[in-house]
Structures are given as C-alpha cells and as structure tokens.
Length: 545
Image (cartoon, rainbow, N blue to C red; front, side):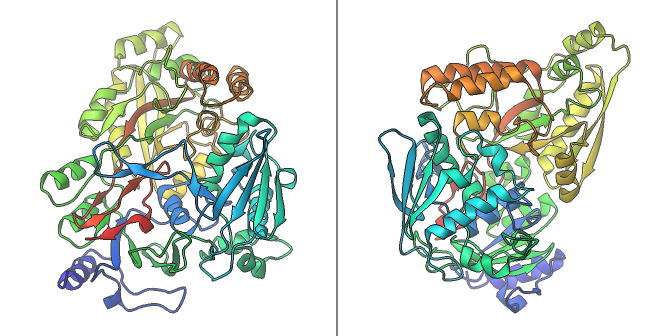
C-alpha cells in the first residue's frame, strides 16, 4: 500500500487524467487524489452523471451510482449472501429500516405509517423530519420533467392525497388498494424515492424553481446518504467523502475518487496494474482476462440487467409488427452470449425474474436466430429488398458496440441492412427521450422488482422512458387485472403478468436479448460488493483488506 500513490499518479497522468480539481469546496492537491491507504478507493468509470437532479436526469449508470451513494430511502431491501458466498445480493421481497426505523400497516392494508429515525441527518447536518419526506414527494411529482408519476402509477399517483405528515417524526402513505402495498414499499426502498434535505433546498427556491430542481442539478449535496460530493471536475473527476453521521453507520471507506477514463481497455489496464481499485463498464473479455490472471475479482450473481433493443413503433420500418417479429430471428443470441459476453450472460424468455413468487413462464421461450425464417416473414409481408434501419449505440458501453456489430453482420443474412450510429452519452439520452431513433441498443434493468412495476416501466403511455413509443390496450388490461387480483406475488396475479409478457413478446416493441452479469471488476483486496437491482456499487458496503 505504501507505494500505491506514486504508481497511480504516474500512470493516470500518462493516461491524460487531470488531477487538479475545480473544487466545489476549494479543491485538493493532485498528490491527495490517488489512493494511499485503506480509507480511499479510486474508481475508473466511463463517464459522469448528466446532472444531479433526478427529476431532470434520471437515467444512466453513473447517474444511478451518484443517487445511491449520496441519497437514502425510508426503507431498503436487505443484503443477503449470494449462493456461492462471493458477493451479496438484495432480497427484493423483504424490507429493512433505513431513514425510517420502523413502519406499521393498517388493518385494511391501505395505510403505511413510517416512524423516522431521530438520529438521521443529511450530509449538511440537518435532522430528518417528516417535512423532508413530504417536500421530496411533492417535488418528485410536481416537476414537469420528472418520471416519478409515470413509473409509480397506479400505486402512487398523488402526494397531496397519499402522503401526510402526522408529526415531525411520523409520515403516512396511503394506497387505493391493498394489492398496491408491496409495490409502494418497493418504490420507497429504491433510488426514485431517496429523501431530500428540504432545509437545504428551501434556501435555493425561486418563483421559477419552487423545489430547487434547477439548483440541485448542478449542486449535488442535498441528500441523507453515506457520501457527499467534496470535489467535482466536469468530465474528469468526482471525489466523494464519507458522511460520518450516516444513519446506517459511518462508511469504512472515507474517500472515493471516481475518475473518468473513457476507454474500456484502459480502465481494465489501470486495474490490472494496481493504479485503480475498481473499474466499471468493462468489456466482458477484459473481465475474464483479469479474473483468469488473478489480477481482479469479478462476480457471478442472479442478474436483473438485460441487453435490449427498443424499436420505435411509430417510425418506419418498425411501425409494421411483422418487421419487428422478423427482426427477432435476425439476432445471433448465442454468438452474443459466447463471443461478446464470454459466457457471462444468459438467455431470457421474458423480463420478469423467474425467482419471483407467483412467476409463470407459460407460453414464453427465448427468441432464436433463424435468418431463413426472418427472410420468409419479410417476403410474405411484401418486402423484396433488404429492410434498412439505423441502430444507435451509446459509445460509453463497449459491450453494446460489440453486440451491435454482431447484429449488423448476422442481420444481413436475414433480410436487414443495418447501419450503426455510435454517439456519446448525452446525445444518446437526448435521442431516447425524444424518440428519434429507429432502433437503439440498451443495457438496463428495473430497479423495483415488483412484477407490475417491471412490466409497466418501459411501456406506460406517454412516459418519457417508453422508448419504443408503444401503447397496447390488451397489455394495459392485463396489468390492470393483475393489480386488481390481490397479492402481486400470488399465483393468481402471476397468471396476468404472464399474459402481459406474452402480449409483449408477440408485439415486440422491444427485443429482449439476454441477461448480463455485472460489468465491473475489483482489486483483490476490496471486499463488500453487493449486487443491487440498480446495478450500481454501494460504496458504504465496501472495505479494503
């Protein structure tokens, strides 16, 4: 450990990383930037959050990792040991205290009363009160650009009627139906509902910005999480410092230096040489090489992360369902699993986790590569020339660039002419939201693992994250029936979730390709990795051996 600082500084300077910081709080010297003891970890990451306000910039790996580590929720899904004992995972179907030390459920199952932890304080030192909870919920629903209303319906739709401060340390949530309760709890346990420090935010409200959303998009410290942002250099580096008063206890790692290294191969090399402790968004081939050479640890988990291709159903050629169906047979699924992901991926037949209580896979099976069938389907539909389309890819995700190339080659034999357009993170996010891509490549997940949430997440009518711009009443009817069927984890509701999946599979607004393992790697002396449904790293759970 004594020689780590010198080596790291030299390598990172050679890599073009700038160690001088344009600090939010006055800056720090370059010699302080690299890890030199067990209190500090250095992470090589592909990019930075597009902004710090969830209501403006809710998507992307780096964005989610920021919210996870600077924010805290009322409750959370507990970490449990993985089957092989090498990592932990969340238990999606149980909850434990976080900012709330307990909660009660009314006899009719419609009211959830949370008792706040009196010792919980924000990164600014402000004590948590019920006003913070109410303010947070108001902001999340009353900001025009927020996605919360879309992702939370029908369980949580109106904070004015569903959230009430009982006293300074007690807040109640109500739902319309008892069956909505599990999904409400699942929502409140995850990133979309981290609680804000209203005392701090109210200092910055204006008539045009009544919840300080615009202010917080460029000022990151307004949460109750395990870390605050100490230094921020746009495009280069973020330095996180531990919140010693974090409600779950002071983190073991006191300082996280997150550096932008745009090239995935370079991120892997920096980890192999000991110049960073963690590398994220790696190529699977580099992961396997690191593990095989005993230079790093990688983990195999029960992953909820999938590779997928949204097809904009309101644009040619994907306004024709036959073209969408034919394309499902033009993708080399097995080659993608073996060649791109080096076996660190698995086929899928639907997007619901098979371990969920009440799950049914009736009528579901993985798509298969069959170029002759694809061509036949296109010809029967009147397509005599290759069907042309552009596949847009975020160049921050090297595995998806490789997947796109595999698809381009294989689809040529199946009656498609694919042009790949690689764009940067910001351009990709803008195009997704505007729904200007014919097709795109994504690697994503449902943070909340309640079945109705997972199914509705990407397909709610009018939602900015309904990437395919797809609406189907039969699909919505199946979701409604499941939501009205009682316990969402019951066999009875599971039959409706299965019906919805079958509709989705037949109509193909999105081609769901495979589940993928975490694309990160850790120095062998870093412990405490827990796989989360949001797929990001919980820094507060890490330690250095």
